[in-house]
Length: 521
Image (cartoon, rainbow, N blue to C red; front, top):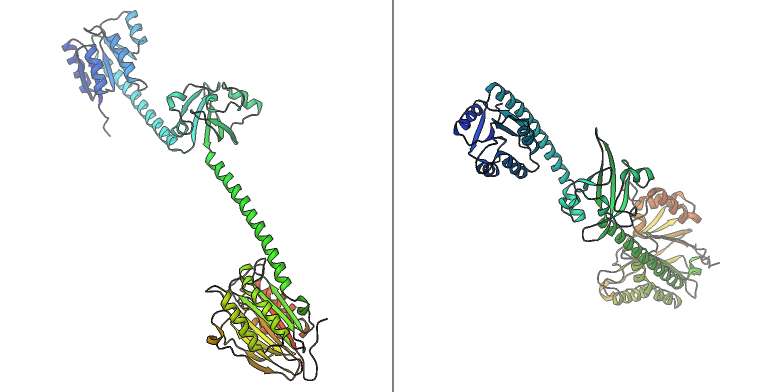
């Protein structure tokens, strides 16, 4: 790959000298730029930004010494080799030229072999300088691309360099940070002094170099104090020790943490209040349900809420003549909202049983009551049963719940009562067409009612418990403990997960002819 030509500024007031030097430069793959005096040399340097400067010392208007001083000022941090070409060979002139910023000295008349050798060496230096500058620029670009602030400092705590993020975090331009003590970036409460000796902090244990991030309080240019995380690394260079600090502004993270803590506390208050309200609602519900009748020896039941509160309700009542009324109700949804939908029906159910109302009249009354109270889209799937006290017969109404089963003593299904009615609360009774179904039995039997929370409960593999699981469990368990058997079977089916809906089961004993139904203990 061909070398890139060097652009060389030649400043000499003698045209023949400029011509000779220019010829040498062309042979060395350089592009000469000519200036006739120091003033023109400074102007051309400012305008053309050459790679190398060859400067004569004795020139009109501005001599080479002053031109070199001004060129060095213009170049700033960029290194541009300046080589003196002069017939002045006195030691003082050479020393003076090098002192004011020249990098080398060549005496006139020039020897081309010496000139060429010097330029080859100079080109190597320039190539190394360019590679170094490119590497530094890449490092600087990477540092400026990092979202965290990066600050380097010497042992005394003086800032050596900062990246763009550090300037943005603290609000200072880099020029106002470099050379200043690290303490200017910290709250007055941190270490108690603006003049920080990093080795002193390390030896005191207040900070550690490498492997630890410490939260501290920073101070912006406008005086704002903010939390920051600081990690420090210790670099042992050949001739000095340097420290690199990585700074992250965590004020937004701390604000979010505070907000999350406040939200969590607020949610906890809401949760606690909801728990208290549910406990109150449960207490009210329990007062509405006659639990003494649920303990009737002819009754087995279980209500298993999906959450803390069940929206399924089971109720049992004895009529004055000993007839047994039973209701299993499953309102839309689950929990407190569902239970509230059922609550108005409980009083009507007990009143109907107290007056020994025909089952169809009781269902009509409950349906019309709920039609007037429930909002659109809310209803109560139910099954109601009346078992006569004086005869082995009864009536049943099923609306929206799984099939009600009449089983014999072994648990086998004798008769299945399919839901053919709308759930309560959807249509007025005159439109719904309330109709009950009569049935009877000749051997000791049981009526089994359940909510769809039982049959639809899914295992971890997505398999529902189903009607088959219900009927298999009834056959596999003794008459007196069938509800307990269903509980155990459902628990095994679900594994460690919860049911997706409230689960309720109600089993009523059906006595044979000539025997009265057992009353509550």
